[in-house]
Length: 155
Image (tube, rainbow, N blue to C red; front, side, top):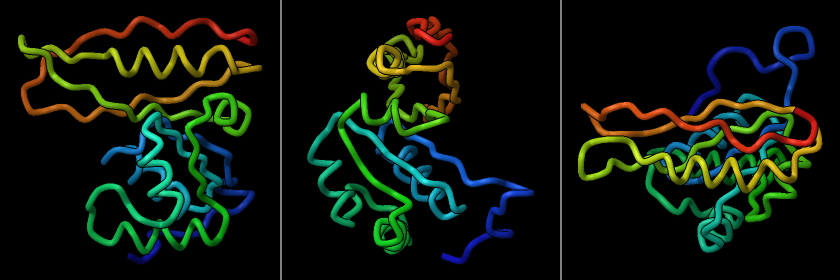
């Protein structure tokens, strides 16, 4: 898969240290793409078998052309995997929550995994940091509001 646009440089798009929480379809693809754009990425998942698989260059899911990019960025040192929230908090300047948001029986989005990930990360943050929450939900999903994550020591 070719790179799109210019490689980041200090003037237009400085490389960042980012974490991606959750390495399902959204998170793993996001982590690999961030590495492709030149950022240093530490991806976290609570499923240690996914962490081991991805860390060895084997995508735990199928996405066209993903595995070669995964291996490329592992070899370049721009992409690593962990199950350690403390390591993720220390590493990243920006945290992306890409965990599951399944639908409940009544069609509302279940934000339990988002809250759990934010709450697991928050105690390890030493300064105020923010990040977007990506969610993949089915067509016609009804919205739901997330409570803000636990306040961090620096925020």
